[in-house]
Figure: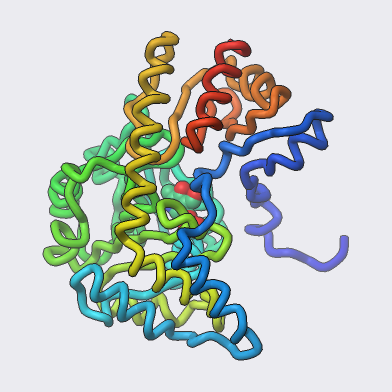
Length: 357
Ligand SMILES: Cc1ncc(COP(=O)(O)O)c(C=O)c1O
């Protein structure tokens, strides 16, 4: 044995990222594979963001602004909140890890519905916490059961809305009702990585929940709708005391200068980004209609992906798709998650699925 890793780390599963198209091509001896496995957008950054990235690249001999002052200011202005209520992290996944580092001691509990985002158990375990999972009902959250699972030892609750991988979402109104039953010593983290794709009628936790509950936290990201997954920048809106505590655990300069400049440019390019989101929402509606026509049953998606609960047929269907160059995300024995891509990619997925099934 080389070195002595902590038991918590030894017991961790390795994080499984979505498979790259090139890797699938090499494994199956094929060409022209497409990746619909990581809920990325199919296009590169919009032109103004690409220009900001190129300009920021000329200054990388310097460290970035660790506090990301300009980006926080831009976010606060955009969201209509105080600057002290916003912070940024190395993707929203980075902020999830920081939240565990900040609040979870060995023996503390972290409650979340399951299945949900795969890093929740990893970061909980890494901090020495105990995961308390609450089963989904019809692929959606059972908030009464989540409330019932909270104990005085619960430090954090993670609620992904829309949920990954099932794509179901919770309304701000239901979240506000749920918050009434949660003690103020437990933080409730509303993880909105896919918020831009959901139905606006679901409301906005930043305006409808946060002002009434100091223990509510909202996480968002530039990775999905804004198309900046590779730059790693996410943000958190929370009570200033929570922001100050979580900020202490940020790796120095973890949000790099290019990411900060790109995020500011993306906020300024809101109109262009909305147009792209609208295209993906239309594509999602088209894919959903085609899948229903083909006889598939699945939850109505609120994010940029579709969850197909194939159960025992999951592995066979996932492999069949991948051998034909369509890379999706399998959850063995449960289902596959398929990202909404460009129109051509979606057509390819639909025709290949018909062939495989
Ligand atoms: C529910 C959810 N939250 C957070 C993230 C993290 O995204 P990022 O770290 O790129 O901001 C993801 C990414 O897949 C996600 O699905």
